[in-house]
Image (cartoon, rainbow, N blue to C red; front, side, top):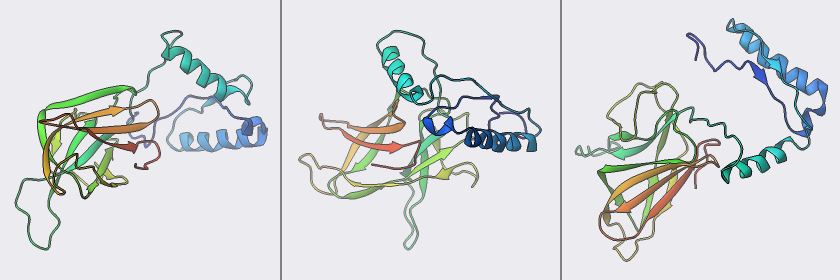
Length: 219
């Protein structure tokens, strides 16, 4: 990102979708984008000539399937943010106060879609059989963090809290409320979700939650 820029500066725009058959809408969209670029002293973006606007998305999806089968050329892109999950600190809780949390990096900046990362050297406690909360954070500025980086504190503008997940994970034969020792594994899917999977130290059970990194919705 250029120094002093508040967003990545595109140099070209490729429209797709039948809605952009309207020259007025396409021109207005490009004019708005170029006004933002001009405000930051960047050159204007140009409009690329595309194919049939009605079929552009369908053709792109078909070609993506072709690439997934090992054919064609794939243009890879990485995550524009780093993603973290909140971990309750082992410090003693203070009555009347929220327990302190740490932020564990699951997907670093630039992580490619379709790739996964295992935190094999770290173990955590996972509560099963009763409702728990998973808090997620994102950062577009902490680009040096790697998978497994554990933050004890951070500046307010470094991490932004995203939607949380509330779920009751199946106990899998254990007592409700039991804390299970687990290792974590994260995967950034091509569909734009961050999958967080917990694997117990003993046994074959697996627990998985998914977070939509594009829309901010959780399941």
